[in-house]
Length: 546
Image (tube, rainbow, N blue to C red; front, side, top):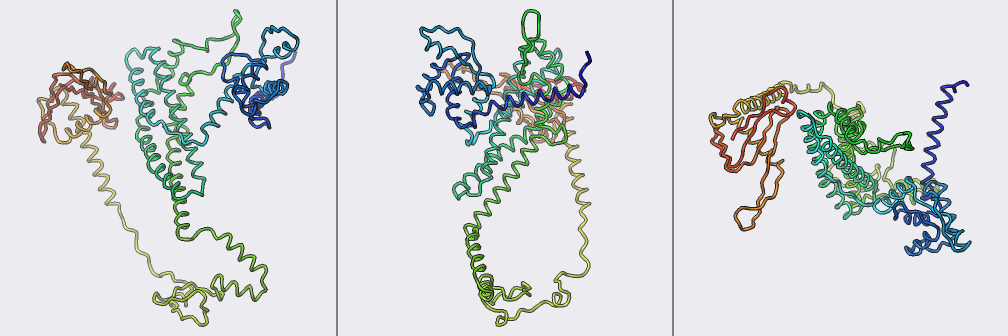
């Protein structure tokens, strides 16, 4: 037997893909059918159960109990609706043994139906759209901080000697991608709502005021937080990226999940499996592409910034429209249509008079030169009897009022730019020297005197570390039942300088920092100064100073 031609095989595969897509799209038909309200009520009955098959009398009883447009259906009409849903792929016929006491009862109960996976998914999405389509969804902005923290901690554990424990890695990856998916979905829903509002041009003063506060306050807070955390998330992903294939392989070896299903001799069937988020390399590529431009098309962060700018432009357009409305400069369409009708019905001479009265123009040579400021000329004044306006010589002789002569040269700012670049280099060099001074002084802070720049950098890192601290509640020891807060450790770092500060809470510890500006005493704190995680391989271990 001859093998089929490659072109025929490709056409057959394409036809199979198109047939599968058509079959899935048919499952949406019940949402646009004339009886869509009845279909929705029937599907809600099936979605309210799990792994249950229902006969026509069962569905009929639930519909009458719920009320609504499908409560008045009879058994024959309901059977027709159920069979139509089976044809579209939303329901499946169920094999069930029927026990009936009469032939009529057997005829009513022999056909039982259950929900298909595709039908359940479509109905769940349809209910969500009907319930919350027009609502403004809040952006889960706090999840972005959790994503940043989860990526940073995961990068530290994966790059540590011995790697991460598979179960711990599985939990962290699943949590990370659930948080990121929820944040990304809330961003898309909110900006879709924003675009819907921006398309309106009938906002009154109250609506415009509320929308302005929403845009200027809420959207600004979102974009600022995303712009602040996106570089940190990109840096954490850059550290973790070379280890992602190994991490996924280790997680698959630990827990295969449904991927362990394969055709075997014991009767197990081949099953298409949709992996959990974060278990495939494509999920990580999507996460990285959200915060970084990986394909030259721009990241989602860039699109978010562009969408915000377009929203601000639309807000300004609405503001201009409302200002024109307040000054009486609203649309004159109705008046212009009435004027056009007058022109159409008027005689030629009357049309000239109407044009003069409407526009105040008496001749074709209207140069547009304004009269003197102390002369007020009504619009109906004719040029023949109106005051004379002096025409500039340049306009009278050359027909143009443009100035002649050489234009002044563009001012050269190269010296200023050079001074600014030199000042920036000096500031960067001073900060780098301060970072080197802090690293060299580690372990002997009590013996050295820091410069002002070094102390300022240390205080900056200390403030960042305390701001990132995770507080924990613990019972007091004074016997009065009081509660106090403490921290285990906190981190602050500057990736550009390659310096990292770790702060730990230790009772009774005293850390003294001497500098030319004075001495700083830190009670109950220990400071660890070292390099960032990206520079650990090229530097010594961190030195603890107390």
